[in-house]
Length: 243
Image 1 (tube, rainbow, N blue to C red):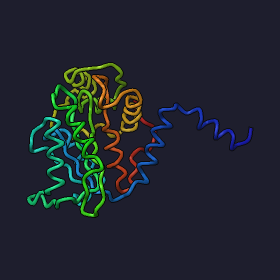
Image 2 (image 1 turned 45 degrees about the horizontal axis):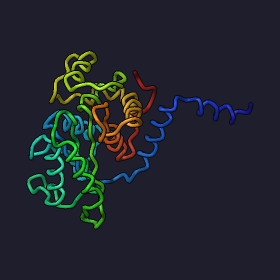
Image 3 (image 1 turned 45 degrees about the vertical axis):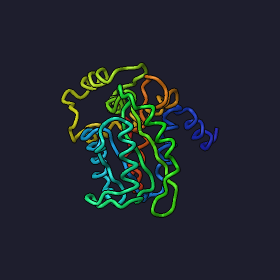
Image 4 (image 1 turned 120 degrees about the vertical axis):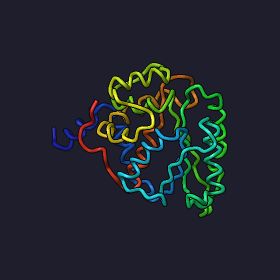
């Protein structure tokens, strides 16, 4: 067997989900590097602080990334409506101009929210229908987690395959992060060395369920995190994943 064949066989025998993760990482790296993102979160502290920590680490300016908490409330429909309002009208106090984004991303949990499915439907209706200041029709994406954002953090440490409640997700996360509290600002710092493992696990979940399904565990947070860490062609996924 020649050297080229040996290398090919070695690649083919990698675990399939890790091959998928690496392909996804490479694709993220070649995306438009200066996309202007509007990210609106359900939570006032936990999710915004996590995403803002990534923004600071990779020096993503607010001219390219705006991470906001919904001022309309925490219900999924309120998150979607607030994101639409900020995009259409801007926010003078924050120096945000109307239409000054290339992509909108609404971040919210399934939890027990009665407006969850209506919010998914509204985001779908807005997807590709809003035009930005360059005259381009832009994506309106939902970054949902079922049951909650803590599932994404939990995936950094273990596989999750069965349905669980938000309380169960937090309890299991405490087994790995005993000091975890909502609203803390260090969730990115303490979990980022396990990022590749979390991405692999999130991809596996997404292969069998979606945000629209029932209570099966699901999160799209890996898509948002990959977009952020590669926004300026950054590559944090070096070395061997933990977990």
